[in-house]
Length: 160
Image (cartoon, rainbow, N blue to C red; front, side):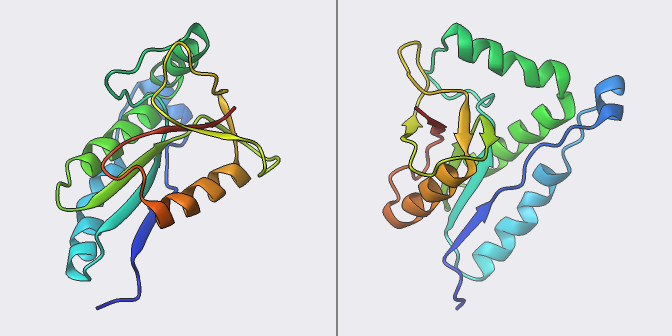
């Protein structure tokens, strides 16, 4: 047995000028996840939380113009990063025996940890901004580890 109870991944997409020009979509992080899952199972670790972008669609979400515009950018300007994020989501969400949570975050900023945080599905009525302070994110992740409100779900997490 191990002292590790939860794996939290803040790994994510990265901008690559060459991939933008060549329109390549390699997914090095997503391709490595089966190794991580194997190690987790070997050591009895069932819980994983992973960062993603909101461009990973969760049914039955609907988007306001603000969010629609924001979500159209990754496939156009970061095809490799967009493919990586979707690959990570697909790999993690397919692990039926693990208690996963994919937290989808917009633009990360530095700021006040006391800002109110929205966690849920996006909708046209959603008041969430397209920003999230890193401090708010850490607070939300720690709360999710303790409470487990979003197991086997993928909430968007943003400041209000």
